[in-house]
Image (tube, rainbow, N blue to C red; front, side):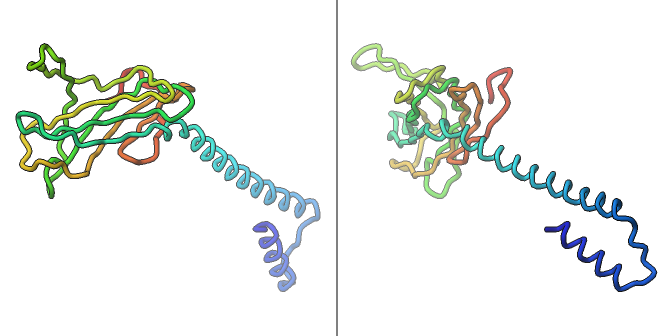
Length: 199
């Protein structure tokens, strides 16, 4: 369409001026061919970009089926706010190398989210629990499987109920070996295969 418009403008200018040299027919054919070729290249490039975006959207579908549910888990005996994150693989294939790089939660109303530390508890006796650093990585998350991580704030909270505000960053590898970063509820971002663990 752009080529036709340019041709019409050139012809209109040429017919209104008597001293314009119209050139030869082969020159006009060559110029028209160049314009059509340029238009074809632009259309092909746009089609390629559109196809690539659609392909990337399809690739991210498995990662989108990883549900994350952050749940307030009350206060511990020291008054520290606790949370639990539950990851559920709703896809039909396994996910790999799921790793949570950071989890922040608000422990008080009208306050910034604070960094939470992962922890695990081991029961030594009926009355004795030992708390240690929690595991934030799952090598394989089978289809339909769940992975839970418990979190606690560094300091004691001033209120008993946790406000509903969290931030989370994790990475995961899909069944086709592609790595993805996900921050909060944003779209998965495809990243190159890391030579070492992210974070």
